[in-house]
Amino acid sequence: MAVYRRGKIWWYHFVFDGRHIQESTGLTSRAAALRAEAKRKADLIERRAGIARKPLPPKFEEYVKEFLAWSKQQHRAKTHALHSLNCDTLLHYFRGKFLDQITPGMVEDFKLARLREERKNVKDGSTIGPATVNRALTTLKLIFNHAARCGFAVENPTDGVAFLEERGERMRVVSFAEELAYFQAASQPLRDIARVILETGMRPEEVYRIEVGNLDFVRRSIYNRCGKTKAAKRTIPMTEEVCRILKERAVKVRARYVFPSPKDPNRPIGGVRKAHDGAVERAGIQEHFRLYDLRHTYATRAVMAGVDLPTLAALLGHTKIQMTLRYVHPAEEQKRQAAAKLETFTATAVQKAAEEAKRSLQIPLQ
Image 1 (tube, rainbow, N blue to C red):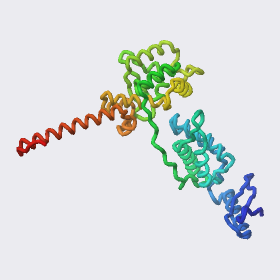
Image 2 (cartoon, rainbow, N blue to C red):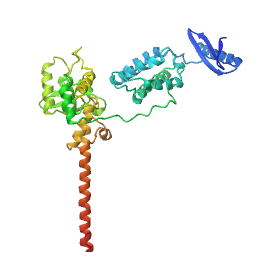
Image 3 (cartoon, rainbow, N blue to C red):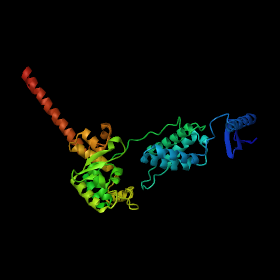
Image 4 (tube, rainbow, N blue to C red):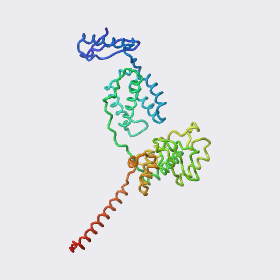
């Protein structure tokens, strides 16, 4: 029997099937701790003998490989990539632990530790946000759900663990002055990619994946054959500037994609984040904005120009207009114009009511 005491609590430690079992009994009596150890060993022997059907869970890093193989078959490429990225983070915290050793307390510690970590590739010292932590918790929850479905004797440690409250996604509208400064500072292919986003409202990843075969220069349209939602599969009209940009690039490229990867011309470009951040900094823009914010800017400007919401939702590839409303951000000038319109409307209505009252009641206007 291998029991020992930490403080007032007795623990046991033994090896079973090559696996170190080291757990707290939660008991202060040595005799009771010995009985708990004996029961734990009996449970393990019963499982091995086939009395309990569920197999012993593997280590976390071993099962992550199985989960990702399943995810690759079940999920869209983008979703699978997110799970893969989250697994890299989770492995940092749970590597070496068997699945049934991971407790809700460990998950709570993971949440707090992640919130204290600084974000990578940023210079403002900001830390990991609640949304990022929650996405990792979602992946962890799926891992344990999958393990349970595969017959392993595990309890999901995320059950009862509260997800963090997420702040509303920060959306930014780029001013016309910022737009001019940004495009003067932007290098290629960022300049063309950003211009297409700003003038079509396409998502950055949709622009990266534009194929030469999906361009119609006669009808001046782009066919987006896949995307984030069913509505993302749509035909998008080109502006004159976008038509010029894409036509020039379509003539020059020798492969499938208009914006090919510099490493492999048969694949689309992976991203332009570093180039974008550099352009924002060189342009002297004080309030940083993301490349995706050019899509928000397109939506806001479209509403300012009088585009109705159902049409805008179709252009953006939204299934519901409620999502489109999140992308529309009235500028200060719009707010002032709205206030002026309301003021004029109210004054006119009051004047009209007063005139009608004078005619009907023959009372003098004050």
